[in-house]
Image (cartoon, rainbow, N blue to C red; front, side):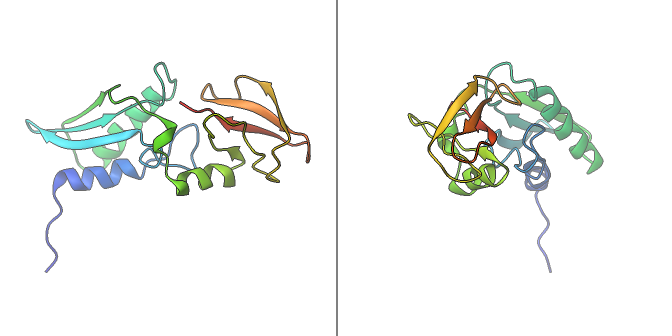
Length: 154
C-alpha cells in the first residue's frame, strides 16, 4: 500500500515544476525562487524570493502558483514574498548553469566575463547592460559573431 502524500509535499511538487516565465527551460525551484511550502492555519502558504527587487516576473510567478494549486484542488492559498535571505546566483546548481548555457544564455561567472554559450569562446564584448530581461545583459561573441544573453551575477 502506498502511503498518502502530505498536502504540503503535493503542493511543493506542483509549485516546483512550474517554469520561470522569463526562462521557461528552468523551473522556479531550479532557479531558487521557490523557498518553502507549508500549511499555516489551514492555508497552503508558498514562499518565494524574486531574483531581484522589482522583478517584473514576480506577479506572474505568484499567479502561476495560485492557479496551479487551485487546479490541483487547493482552495486556501497564500503566496508570500521574502527578501531574506536574498536570492543569489551563487546558489544555482551546476545542472542549472548547464541548462542556461544549453538555452543559449551564458551562465553567471562572478568576477569574470561570460564565455559564449554557442562556441565557448572567452573573446566577447558587452553590447548592452540589459538583455531580453533586466536580469540579463546582452553580449556578442567575437569568435562566432553570435549575440547572446548573459545571466548577471546577483
